[in-house]
Image (cartoon, rainbow, N blue to C red):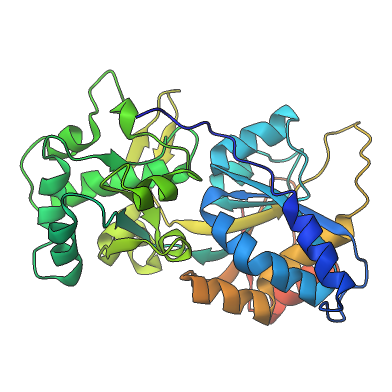
Length: 354
């Protein structure tokens, strides 16, 4: 297998779709700004953005929506390097957003959690056994025994550029311990060694490309979020709360594990969350963007009854919004536009420092 490129295509067609919809009279009364929200978003959101969030946002506000989906960590790097200039960044986890503090972002707004699952292909030679594991006819430990079978094709993302890849590796390690698998099972599945923290290179895919690889049968099974598996109509095996990194009740347990990355940094365990922020332009750089109202309208839309309903239907587990402030910022009113602040308070949002 070849490694897919990290960057995905910019969804330029979204603006055209929104414009056509407005021309046909399908937009309802909203902000009235009729601008264009520009978002950078985790690749796991791509199907949801295209099929649900974009048309619903345009109908509610009259604004268009364009954006780019890729691994959250890679997007944060591109923003800091000046290669991307979105108005909104929607990330898996708050860490990629926090890497933009304090110059490019002033907060991370936690919206939901997203359970980790193992998606698999009906074209796999092991599909029948995977079906039986999914139904409970075979124990979950058989999944991990199957993964270490020679010839089994596993797909996952690079933990150095995408949080999903980090959580999947932590899940494999926790499963080996909790299910009392043979010593070295996790290393054999992932191909990791003391000198290779990422593991088998042929397992690594771009987050946006991985669902297609699973559906096509290029891999037998792979890492996925529940929401993404549903978006792409993939078969998947549900993991228990102790392994899916999405149950707030297990936060202490999740936080007890970490992964060492190739750059020497640590990837901490914790909740898999959906977080968002508004992105400021680089200091001293004049920007031609005049659609800040549309950007904040999109963030407010995610907190609106319609936006929350779409997220829940997609498989996200909604939580009371939690606002993490960048150093130097003291209150929600100091960082959130009025429309976002109103929605945040309506949902019982709480504020945390850092």
